[in-house]
Image (cartoon, rainbow, N blue to C red; front, side, top):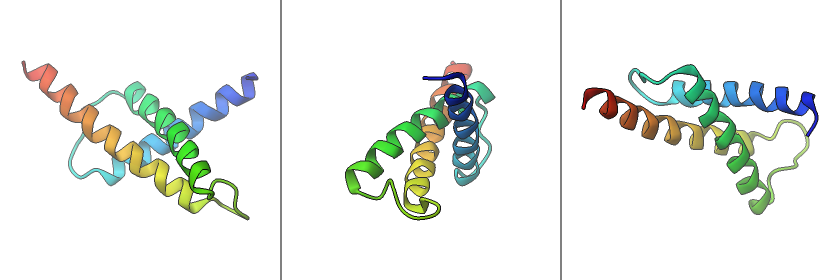
Length: 90
């Protein structure tokens, strides 16, 4: 993987993670780095799911793939916020 690929993954991770945080209601008390990691993982898994479903490569913007990634990020943010909040309260 080239350095541009790493930067692209980081940028996509931040965007997907941020969109995931916006979808989840309420305030999430998790750090930015965790949001970014969740976004990167959600983007990778979402791309794999979209490939299996045959919707990864479409003409124009891959809206279905993006929706899958955001949903996965929202689930990840919800789980992380719940776990992170409990850990701090214990």
